[in-house]
Amino acid sequence: MTTLLACALLMTGCATVPPESKDPRDPWESYNRAMFQFNDAVDRAVLKPVAEGYDRVTPQPVRTGIGNFFSNLGDVHNMANNALQFKFHDAASDLTRLIMNTSFGVFGLFDVATPMGLEKSNEDFGQTLGSWGVPSGPYFVVPFRGPSTVRDAPAEIVDARIHPLYYHDDVAQRNVLVGVRLVDIRAGLLPTERALEGMAVDRYMAIRNAYLDRREYLVTDGAPSDAQRDMLRELEDWDDDF
Image (cartoon, rainbow, N blue to C red):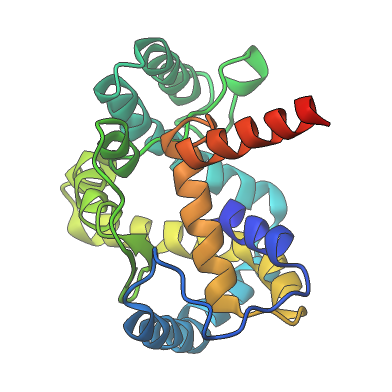
C-alpha cells in the first residue's frame, strides 16, 4: 500500500481530470466513490489517529523489527503463490528467506536474508489468478478495506487462510497481532499520504489508477501489456519512418 500511494503521488502531480472522464475499468464509480469516502471517514476517525500515536511513541528500531516480523510471516503466502504460478525458483528463495530470518533473524525481527541476496517476493492469490488468465474485472472498493477488483477481493480471503496468523490458536493473541500489523502498516503510509494530500488532485482517482496500474505490473512481473506492446510498436514504426 505504501508503494500504491507513492505511485499515486508520482502519477498525478498537480493534474486533475474532469469528473465526466469515465474510466472503463471503473463502471461502478458512483458506488466506489461513496465507499471510498466512507472508508476515508472511518480511517480518519479511528485508524489514522492510532497510527499517528504509534508513530510518535514507537522508536524506529522497534518499528523496523515489528515490520520485519510480519514481513517474514508474509513470505509463507509469497512462497505458496510463487509455487502456484510455477515460479519454483522464487518459491525456493522464499522458503530459504523464511528459514534464515526465522532462525538467524530471531523469528523474523531482523532481516538477514536480504543482505545475502535473497530478495523478497511480493505475491498474492490475486496475482496467481491473473497469471492463470483470470481477468481483473471491474474496480471495486471494499468496505473497511479499500481498493480492489472483482478478482482480487475474494482472492484476499485465500491469502488470509494461507497466512500463519490464521492458524494461531489463541484468539486473543491473534487479534492483538492482527491489530498491531494493521496499525504498523497504516503508520508506514503517513509520510506519503501527507505529500499526496498537499497536492490538488482527485484522491479517489489517483489511488484507483495507481492501484490498477500497479496490479497489472505485478501480475505480469513488469512485462508490458498488449496495449503497451502495441503502443511501443507504433512508436518504433514512427521512429523508423522518421
